[in-house]
Image (cartoon, rainbow, N blue to C red; front, side):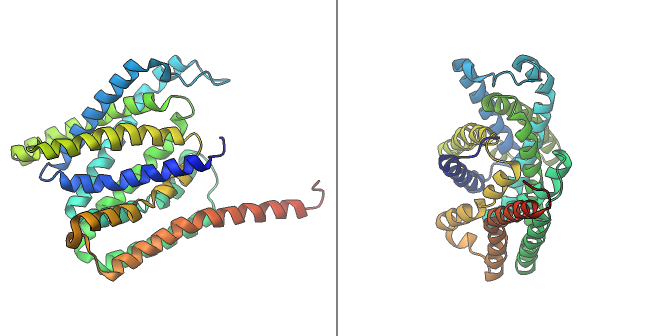
Amino acid sequence: MPNPSFRDYLQLHFLVVIWGFTAILGLLLEPLGAPALVALRTGLAALGLIVVLKVRPDNMPVGNVPGQDAPGQQLARDQWALLATGGIIAIHWFAFFWAARLANASVCLAGMATSSLWASALEPIILKRRVKPIEVVMGIVVMSGLYLIFRFEFDKVAGLLVAVFSAMLAALFTIINSRFAQRHASLVIARHEMIGAFLTSAVLCGVYIVVAHPPMAELIPQRPAQWLWLLILAFVCTVYAYTAGVSLLRKFSPYMAILTVNLEPVYGILLAVLIFNDRERMTAGFYIGTLVILLAVLAYPFLIKNEAVSSENSSADEPGHV
């Protein structure tokens, strides 16, 4: 895996700003229901990606990987797994927008900051690497931050729990995509996964219609402004940001990528307070808890670097080391 450049870090942070804005877009699109919102978002994104790949077919194959099948054979082998991953993404987005509706954008984004905790638990299982003690410690720190939020924002517990569940799914599909990114072009991965996400969200939307009998305003945007927000959500926050994010997984480890994405609450909460003002103002306990989570996020790269240096020094001191 090549080392990321400064430009790669800047692009990742720019994507985090865009993702932080998605919770705000979900609220701006009210009263559109979460199932219909995800179905429209993924349907438009899938359509856009299909068109892009028709115009730019040269982006399809990544290239042959020594010891693996040709790109076309790899894609045929992985297509069902890609579609299934899209299903996970659809449920993640459904939970994400539902959390924002149950509480608000700030609580939703604070819950999403636990994605690195989930990554530290899931990555060793999926990628079969050893558990790092520092990640366990960071997980405990993140849990303490969540406790503070729970304690002072008890009326928003349901929204926070749904957001934490959404964060777990985000960590899961990011880790899965880190493998796909080594074999397929990011546009191809995004196309298959958005198709899978659309099919899953269409089923969720159908169940929602049958069970809840929602009014038309919860199923289709009613105002021109809503269509504008939806197009931004589909093409800027999904087609561009999702494809670019998958591409960066060739340079960042899943944990490092997810850890950086944990800065989403900083950007998102600032934007939410600016846009919604008093609706997004929280207790001091909420901000202290969020700060604890973010300090863990910011401290991790330095702690893991020091751990690596200490490990190298220990190896150098061992007898027989040249």
